[in-house]
Image (tube, rainbow, N blue to C red; front, side, top):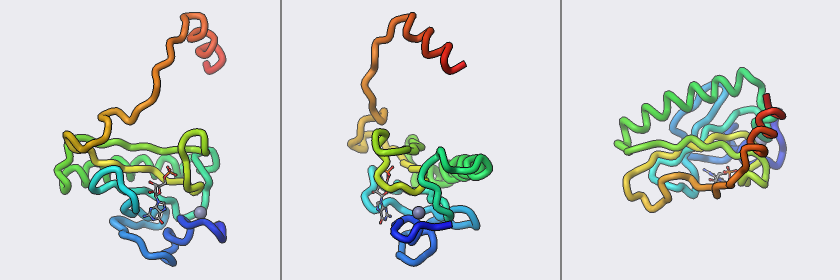
Length: 137
Ligand code: 5GP
Ligand code: ZN
């Protein structure tokens, strides 16, 4: 399935040109048009799933295996010093293109980004931690 107005559906189908570094029957991997670092790439599913909630489990498994292989390949070729794998879901989490994708971000010492893709650190009480733990377990 695909969505008519989805840019990543068009890119995945090859209707809009992209810098493709890998392709198989499930995924196309392209260079990000506005990269965080040299080599920043996106694993895009060929079928349209808005986010990880919609993604079938077997696709999620394949995406992670592919991410692992590409992390090794890109690190060897690009000689980067580290690697971030990031995947955003829904607007409050920073997703801007609502078609499942994973960011592969080679990291270089002094690449100008904060080492840790950052978030604020909450100070939660033991009770609050215990409450969350109980709800989730
Ligand atoms: P998100 O914010 O949804 O996790 O990531 C979307 C990513 O897609 C961004 O890093 C953005 O630069 C990239 N992007 C958006 N439109 C295009 C496009 O047309 N071509 C390519 N190659 N990347 C795109
Ligand atoms: Zn799509």
